[in-house]
Length: 316
Image (tube, rainbow, N blue to C red; front, side):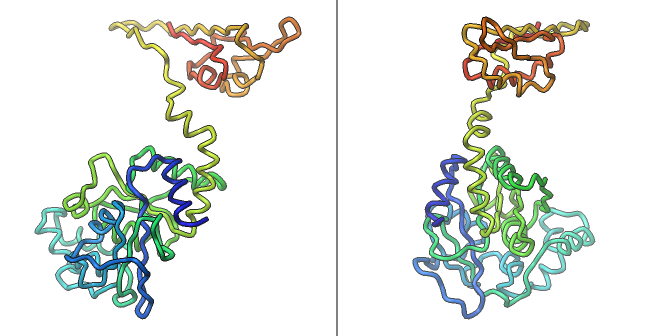
């Protein structure tokens, strides 16, 4: 699938605000891709991601990296002794002791200096190079669906390794390239201070080689799971009473099934986690019934899954 197609599917399935950003680290001697430009002023890596997600394609040699920490982490330049020592974290009041700073620095992933000589970034749909990683600026709900897509074929859960330091350089670029596992970041002091990353947004980075698999899984999830969750189909229709102080009476669930609407599809029986709903035969037709409604846990799954809207559930 072409990059433009990948981006189109991702935008459609996730309703993204920003374009996913294709990021590649160029090795010495590697050709600069076509249609990228060197910005007129130095930028931090997190700023470059901001500019790329808005539709720009960038070529960033070391002279255009405004953050020496990030450039060193990505292997473009040597790390300065002052940055390596961790003392700046104390000056910024971001960590209390030099021991804490050095522990944080030692735990992040970095590339050896000189292994790369530039970064290139572009909106995924316009990239004319094969990315190492694709970085999303997204909301938690969209992040959840990417996690679901990653689990779709394997059932595996995810373990993320991140911090509030060196977010886009260490956590989203270097770590994902080295581990070939997607990672999240909530941003860092720099990314929050110098970009337009909103208070409600975070980052997720995906190894490019896994992106097509995620897109195919998202297509499957978009058939049912994504639209249902976004319609909030299990929300109780009305919440009109609250318990009074000292009221300890157990809730009673009233489950009503409209036989005229019911087509006997059996979805309510299949989805009911407590096996409250059973299919019966009425006048030679299959109909849903609730012989043990007292066991209903009021999850509203039957209400949300019934295509005919034949089920009403009231909690008293």
